[in-house]
Image (cartoon, rainbow, N blue to C red; front, side, top):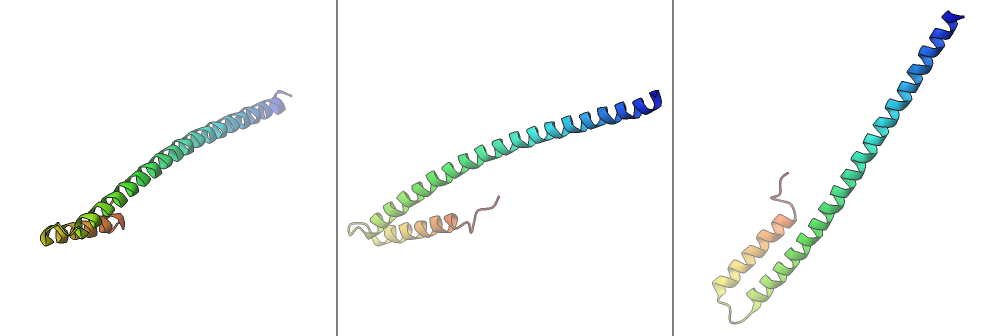
Length: 96
């Protein structure tokens, strides 16, 4: 009876250990996912703020370059800067 009971106890302990370790891995994965989601939300807010800043800068540059009292060389510089901003926004020059 001891020989039959010992394998059953070992199997029960092994199953309990496996269940506990699986639970701990699931909790760890859930925490990592929550952290990742929070970081993602923060990055999206940052991107939206940057998009608003770029839109405001574009509007300011358009206003500057179209104003009749602005010299032509300043207007051309403003247009070039606007193109640079657009290129950055389109991720042509952004690298991770």
